[in-house]
Length: 339
Image (cartoon, rainbow, N blue to C red):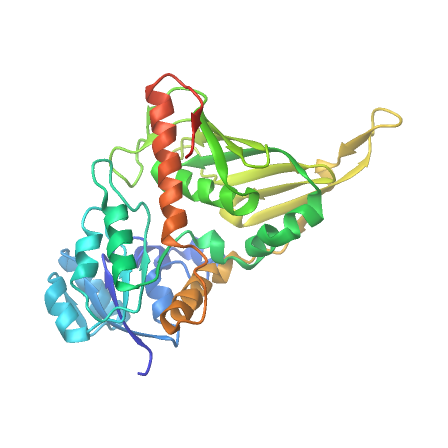
């Protein structure tokens, strides 16, 4: 093959497992790193590194990956990767990059750092030193509809934003981070952070020690978004409800259900208006190929022909915001400034 020589480090649920969920497959054509790499012509997927024998067997048997094993140095010597997909937990990703001399670009899963390390900052430092572009898998940044909303489409549809509420579950550092990033994508930069209630353990979350806490973000334009956690043992939801001056946009079910509701004459009072939430029109979802499009951007970065859609520096800002949420909760809920 003539594509970019690629390895995946960490071959668990996000790297492979989600691609086998039959319900997810109905809506997300590309649900895992493996499903994209198996189909994308820009990448020559040659290696997988993981300490779990079952994960390595999955890579060999189900994805026909030639070079699989627990030793990063051995797989790196065999493949000489130009692209690294880092789907391991945080902690030593910066050190991994230092051992891959031929890299042209990197895609990394969030979070970038653990509770007690600065791996994200170290990763940023070594990437900058070597001139390696790094993008972080906040996949909404690659979704066609969401990118259009972020570049004027939101204002075109609902006018000036007046109020925003969000829901997340499975942990602040997990889906909470996705929602924070999505809010920044649509609304701009955060100026202050404040918790609105107590912190609770995020039971069942994929990241050890993760928490749930309600919080508010104030944006540079003055908009305030309130965000609330849900217990996914009852049901899943990661979504936003955005009320503008000329309509309402609801983005629910992790982007699968997006509804635009218009402003019409108020049904209960003369000379007043209302948002007709019972007359909302569904918008076409474009989540199915968003993950694939993130890899389009990765290939273009390796070729030096594009800017990153989800850059490492932006992802580090998300983690600073998460840190301030935790700090506000620990200090009793003060409003904290994001420097």
